[in-house]
Amino acid sequence: MISYSKQCMVMQNVMTVFKSVVPIRTGNLKNNAVKCEYKGDGKWQITIDESVAPYMPYTNEPWVSPKWNGKKNPNEHWFDDAAGLIALLLSQELQGTLRR
Image 1 (cartoon, one colour):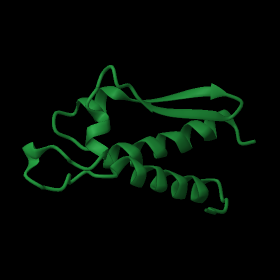
Image 2 (cartoon, helix red, strand yellow):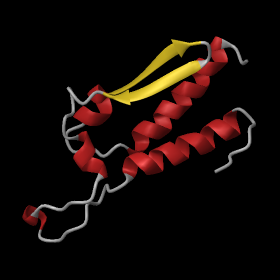
Image 3 (cartoon, helix red, strand yellow):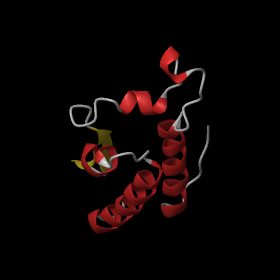
């Protein structure tokens, strides 16, 4: 296992990449709701606190309300795309292999 200080460095890079793709309107989601926590034994967890940003799921999903007049959500699937970026970054940082 890599050292805790190396893990912190890697996770700092991960969070920089993750936050770079978080949709920004007010900055609340990016600056207040996104959290990274060390869970011990080399495990880290990135979460989005929906009590801070309860609208988060709607930023990732297709717009279906008539309110949008058929417009496509410009942020659709951003969270899924971010997870893919993080997987790629981690495989590079840790010199691993990415498999589906």
